[in-house]
Length: 115
Length: 111
Image (tube, rainbow over all chains, first blue to last red; front, side, top):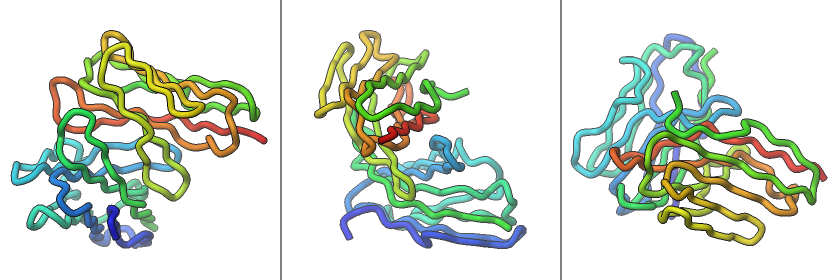
């Protein structure tokens, strides 16, 4: 499809397990963001990729969280040793760049539930 | 501390009433955007404002960017149940390069 695709759409995991969330951005978009959204809340910035530059990881809440972006396209967000407080919707967005007024296009998110 | 402060957090009104949502910051933004998010979906861009003092209208929605480019407002006239959703302001501060979001305003329009 032409939009941002995220998988899986829902993930239930046991506390202590590792999970991988995938994001396929729009082709040609150099910027990619991961955000976390708790129920009824706004978006918490996690990590930002822009082209071949080093990612901005300043929003990652702990060293259990990591992300990579291979070939400037697909990105994977990995959460190790999941905790119940990690339960949230994880949203990925891509944009053409970081220029003035650039629109961010979002996927539908992955709803993660840690039991 | 949120870079972008939105108010109110929740707003519930009757169909046909008007409403205003505010987005404020102590930082200067090169542009501000408003997104709307419906349940189970990702946010979708409504508008981008780039010039201080700018006013943009999108049907019944009016967006304003403050003269100092530190604040914005979204006004909805004669709200309809289809306007229900989470409204998020977002922007890239002049001294940064990544998009930051406010905490959002949940708007409920009752029929």
